[in-house]
Image 1 (tube, rainbow, N blue to C red):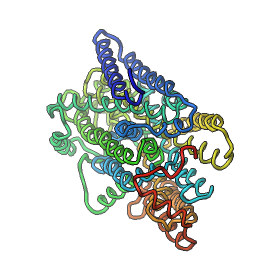
Image 2 (image 1 turned 30 degrees about the vertical axis):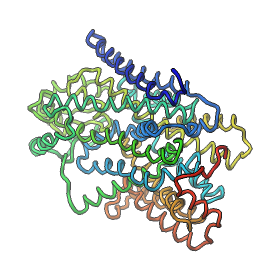
Image 3 (image 1 turned 180 degrees about the horizontal axis):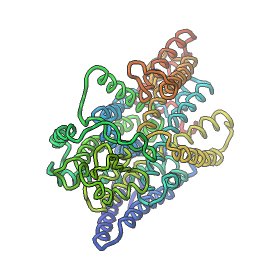
Image 4 (image 1 turned 45 degrees about the vertical axis):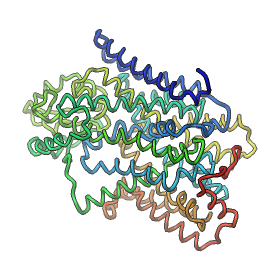
Length: 604
């Protein structure tokens, strides 16, 4: 090919997409020839991970600029795809539709918050951070406010939020690996970690960027195909997004008949599974509306505070490209989020509508127990059936399922060819790996650049800085896999906590650092310390200390408390202490001018 790699991106990823579709057709052919489902599942996961690892190896680098910000040469549309892959984590791909399946209307707050957050990213953050020219989010905090203490506080918030998030992604990769490879969940998380490290360890941001573009293509194809297929099979057309209202109405008719309510047993033999207890579509007023709005607000402000997302906009060639990149990110994310409610609705209908051949509620317990997909998921402790009243029929309150498997099990539930299940597993693995790559890189870069290079050893050469970053990647990844294997919370719960930690400590120091010249170093430090401290204390009291939530602000929304405390502390302390010097105030003015050179030099 003539020209550079960047000039041939369209051709390279066009060939990659064509090759992937040929692989899917080959797997379908093997299934028709009698190759077992387990073999197809293993081939899907192994093949895609091998491709990602190859891209990571080909993108290896020893240049600081390429390792931290991909050489600042990623075109807007490809950065949008990489950001979408970075953003659409295991939580989005694996757990979001499961959350809507079990939690109903209220969980749409996640979708509104996660998409609305990009409005804040575009209007308040991304273009200005790109103009600044920093490598990491703590790099901006440390330079804007000055001093190592402010930088160190930002590193602490980043590590806490990103580490919480990365455990959820490794949890998702472990869920997929355990099912596809028929290995215990505890072993699956270590398998997932191996794939994640292969993609990110050698090439840093450059490797992660080109791998994430490839992962986005796989995950969006894997998410859309089964929903469109299932919708067409159920008679809702090939674009269910505009026609699944009738399915929602049918679920509302069935719910009173099959009975939502109390689980048949208080404690299943293993954790993480539950029954359907919440109506699918029952928006309420008053406190329900308040909870919906506060959940969406937490997800929006958390989105605009997450370092692994903000650092993606450091990789574009210009401020204008950073802004266009946000628009592309939102478009690519929209494709999946617009589909998740349809997937949850159609899957629920498959299980509970007696007019469909795939329904299981009200059928013979023994017959359901012997269904292939029920046996497969039960064997890895993701599904549990119990005939508690001994009537020989499966009731709704006797069917326990883990929310994280709704998307993964949908092709089997709907009776689609197993090749679609393999495709979905590959997509889920791509989603979990792409986000985990970005998170691990954000943590390792902050520790190696901001803590090691900027604070501990400013004279460290490039080789030592990159070695430190890679060693940290392995260590942090191993710690994340260990925590994930303990199953302390659900995937979606861990993700919500990460957003709350980020908004508690970083949202206002970042926003006011760009938009309020009077914000100074003591104010920023107070904002980060008080915000994170108050938010974490509130989480502990509500979650484990027996405290009743204030105004319905529970453990998923504690960021509201932390962010308010952060704002008050930052404004009060900034006004009570001397204003920043003239040079710093001029720098803040310059950041808001789209044109011109970056504030920081290339080799800062």
